[in-house]
Image 1 (cartoon, rainbow, N blue to C red):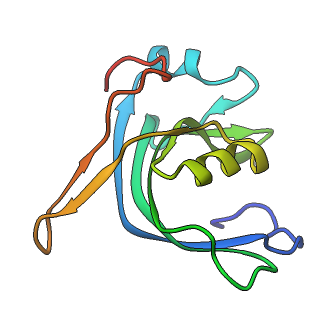
Image 2 (cartoon, one colour):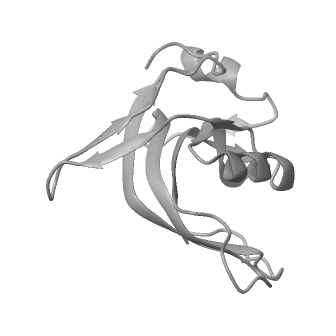
Length: 146
């Protein structure tokens, strides 16, 4: 079973679309990742390996429930995550969350209690297959360069 627990019965509060999504996954050592993740979370392994994921995307069509319009313009985001379990329930632990939209970054910090940072992210489509994503270094993120 893909989801080992039931879907929430709570009403949705936001919908959005991720466009131009790219995933990068890198195997990491226990010694590298354990100090970055709270001890109450168990590190999840796939085929015995710990992984870190880097997701870059454009978030578009952002709509809050009950509002007839969207007050967000599309924005670019990057998150760095690892995979964890808590009391047997799988999830992700975000090591870094970045957005190039200050309003979205601040709302995510306040409403969702996510540790988003503002970043200057640019995305340029070079042709049908290639793109270039530029993200400045993370002064707020205390992990070694990947």
